[in-house]
Length: 112
Length: 114
Image (cartoon, rainbow over all chains, first blue to last red; front, side):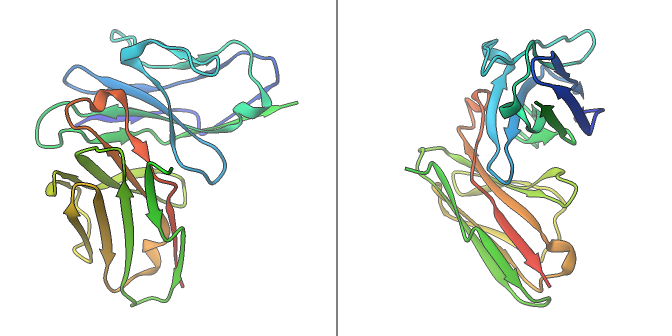
């Protein structure tokens, strides 16, 4: 069964500090991974997807198959980055094709 | 123009009532989902439909019945509401074949059962 683990429920940093939100996954196939962000009481928005190796709002994430990780990083955090961040794994085969499994979420707070 | 829209945004109702939540997407996607976000903010899939066909049903009580009249709509009907059903329900959509590009979520329906 697929599983996504975000070990930190809460993460606090000061503005300008580097930030890393951890994500580990368990999946028997080739993983398709995403980071979603949810600002206070809003919809989930796609932040990053591993297939495109892009940088959005200064965030990057690299898939490390050896460590089964997809950590989200930003070198200089901003106050507007404060939000809930979810790592998600898409099931690309089998009976649950297309299912997104989410981690527990990490609440990032960036202090001024 | 909202890509995935849900109605209502807020729903407060008494235990035992029956209620429905509607979802519509104008992205031309062929696959739609219902997710439940509980009080601890944990997100769990409930159902998935592809071209009006149910493809994922994640051990949800049969008081919950999804209906997809066409591939742009996925509604959720809940019978005999219980306190534990209080949560935020999110609808999402994608293309099945290119889902690796991401899913689009609605703004959620906050259901409170009193």
